[in-house]
Amino acid sequence: MASKGAHTAKSKAPDTTYEEVKYLRHLIDQKIPVVIKLTDDEEVGGFVEFYDVGFLRLTRPGETNLFVYKHDIKYLYEKGE
Image 1 (tube, rainbow, N blue to C red):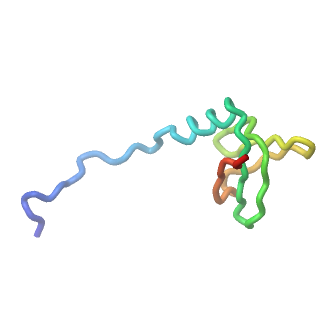
Image 2 (image 1 turned 180 degrees about the vertical axis):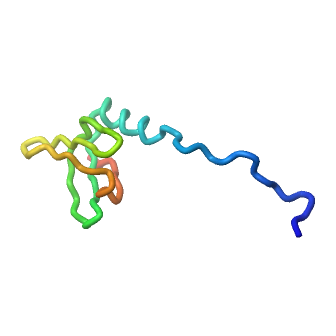
Image 3 (image 1 turned 60 degrees about the horizontal axis):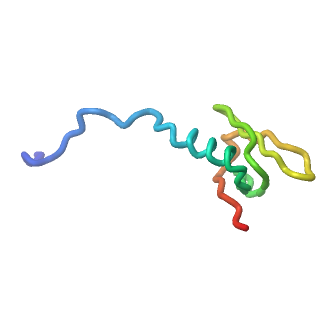
């Protein structure tokens, strides 16, 4: 039995907060180098040049640019100097 002070949520969390979009836009605008850890534990580095709902375009100076599917990304972090 729930106590009288129990909180019941009337609304659910939003489906999207757009924080991913803001962060990716920041990485692009500031040309911040990143490292992407893939689900197979491979790491690739470069600059996020473009993003879409399903992938990121990673520009890699001196190497071939990559299109990385988001479902293949384990995580992404900013590369320190």
